Length: 195
Figure (cartoon, rainbow, N blue to C red):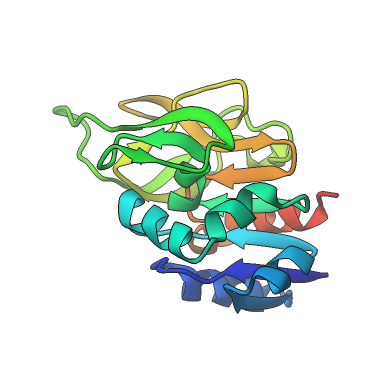
C-alpha cells in the first residue's frame, strides 16, 4: 500500500509524516499529480489559513485533482474544512466535497478560541472505530463544521460539532491524529483498512 501525503503549505506535514513512519507505512510527500492519482490512499493534511491555502491549491491545480480522486482520501484539520463548500475564514470558497459551511467558534466565558487541547469523541460510527467512544484526541482550531448527515463523530465545544466525517471515498477529521497518541493511531489504521 502506497500513501501519497499531499505537499502544500500545510504546517503539520512533517508531524503527519512522523506518525506514518511510526506505523511503518510506505508514503511519499508529493505535489505531483500522477503520483497522487496513482497512490492507493491519499492524505490531505492542513494547518494554516483557508483562503491562502485554497489559492495555493488552485495555482498548483491540486484543487481539481483532489475532488477527482477515486481512492480513499483523508482530510486532516484544515484539510477537512477545505473539503467543505465554504469557510467563514476570510469568506473562502472551498472544494465543495461536503456541502457544508465552516463556521467560526464564538468564545464565551467558559470557552476560549481557538479550541486547543484534548477533547472527547462522541458517538463514533461509520469508519470511526466505536472503541474510541469518549476517547480523547487533540484539537487546534478556531473554525468548525456543524453536525450534518455526513458526521462520523461529534465533539462538544461551545456546541456539538463534526469531529469526523465521511462521504463516499472522502474521509475527514477535525482533530490531529498525528498528535493524538494511541487514539490517533487507531484512526489512521482504520483509514488504511478502508477499501
